[in-house]
Length: 271
Image (cartoon, rainbow, N blue to C red; front, top):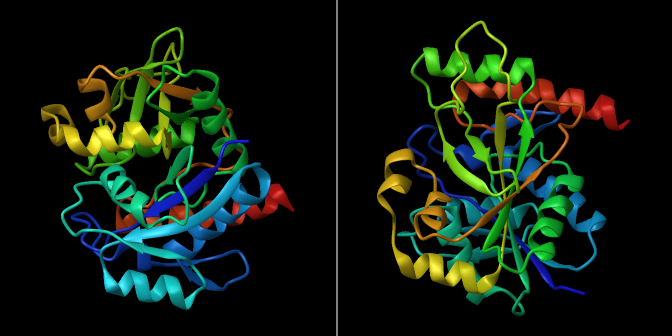
């Protein structure tokens, strides 16, 4: 059985939402928890549902996040401040794990709504194809999610990420724009795939990624996974059915009430 480590990269200095991992979110029971606590709970659900999970850690360079995480029972690995993105932070965290993993799962800290079944799908996608450097997940965007993406774009806000795939479900490109293009007020002939902040890597691919340095498109789009595509490394995409709630990430402060509504919706769906 593969040994799986799950890492939650978390940084304080987000340009769009400083201190985002510590942002408070009210749950359906009225209790307020930090974004990091909600994401840790999602990691715990995945670890309980997928065989082979050996450990879960928060990877950060910020003592405020580390102190908060430890105070709430989370394991922490400190990483350098100069990590450019979550994937580099996962690579840096490898040395702090208790044992070398076969697969590393990156559950991004702003995606607390990811179901355990999606984590399993990404791991299975990577395990099924030895040629993949990593696998990630996407879901067909619902009408509500597509409208949210279009609203963000119209307001000049950077919202979610979309992906287009080949017939073999390998990634062709990721963008913070809506791809393929969908004219406002129209229905797409091909579903827009919303990329989910979830990755499964082989450790050697993680190390090669960190050694390669950033790619031009990666920097222009602000999307770390484009470094793999720029290097010609295949990226598998597990296209998963959307859960009974919308997978909205906390990208901007205005997303807070939207995520709180989906936390309540998830509780109803899983009750």
